[in-house]
Image (cartoon, rainbow, N blue to C red):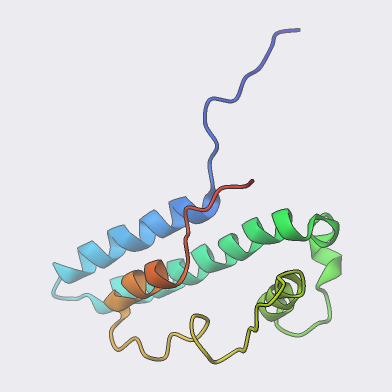
Length: 127
């Protein structure tokens, strides 16, 4: 049997985030940008969810090993996942509705990219 080697690690949240950036640039040059902005917002959420899962696998591998059942019945799965992650972060006081979780101060969909970049390091790699 042959030997396999890994030449590159692919992080889903990074590729999704690159898609957000591409959509933001494209929307800026289009007259009918509404549809691109909606796609941008949806893609930004998918990137955020992928990033939460990425961090969760590192910080809480016990829960993420059984992710489908671990968060079932806990209301909003993203909130439950964030709570599980924050539980392991010493000295971090997370409050939903406040920065960086809240993006209500973003006035245009095209601003979401810069807001998220300032709030999260989406290129984080595992230790």
